Image 1 (cartoon, rainbow, N blue to C red):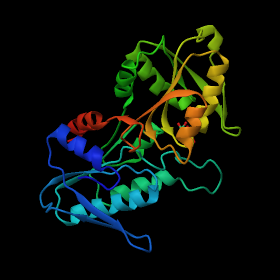
Image 2 (image 1 turned 90 degrees about the horizontal axis):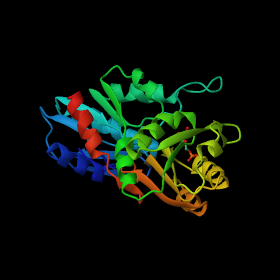
Image 3 (image 1 turned 30 degrees about the vertical axis):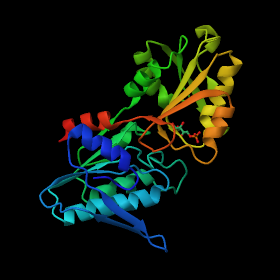
Image 4 (image 1 turned 60 degrees about the horizontal axis):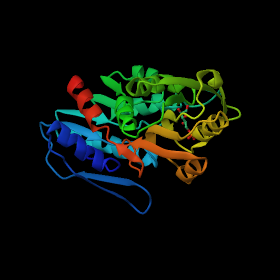
Length: 289
Ligand code: R5P
């Protein structure tokens, strides 16, 4: 079923699974309320609802809750929520006293809306998958991103994680590219990073660098790393991520910082979404169902 935020991805996934694609009519009322309507009877069906929760996150999530609850109301046998970009996953604890642990609330709402299983991709903190009581799987797009990068004729690429949370992503891409990798340590207060590996020792001068992250939102994280890589004399810088939110002028800012190419997946539909995660989702669904 093609949720309003993920119609192209849902079509790709349906063709991977050789499943029927059910369109969903959606609109927004003048006061901002959401409306969804299925264009097919769902009685007795196993329904896979694809709805990434990218900006406007709140609206996407409300649409997801409406689709899950009404699919079950209409007698669907089982409803799987496929949410490639899982919003609120970064607020997984109280960083300051009194804060909401937002992701816990969203997980409860997904379950309360009738989801029988949940699927996501490169979730910001894999530990949050334990919050689900229903079967829940997080898979990764990094091998596919690595394969795509391998077609770009990179010069002795070095893969860089912009913070410690992205190390496993960088490792996965480096494995496909048969490259080495390193990481930066992010200082949250200054929103800047310091290299924890001595890049001079690795020797990245005149080589290409690939920065790999789960999300690019404002682009601030990536731009800081680009500056440091340039200071170390890298040749070209490529940037790859699973979820290209690319808010406002982020794409233009990243490119004008000297990045040759930004690559993302269709987890979030954008003009850099060159890699489809449909095969990854199809594989996870086969495991889950
Ligand atoms: C944070 O730890 C994430 O992995 C990303 O690095 C972050 O969300 C990117 O945000 P921005 O593009 O706004 O710096």
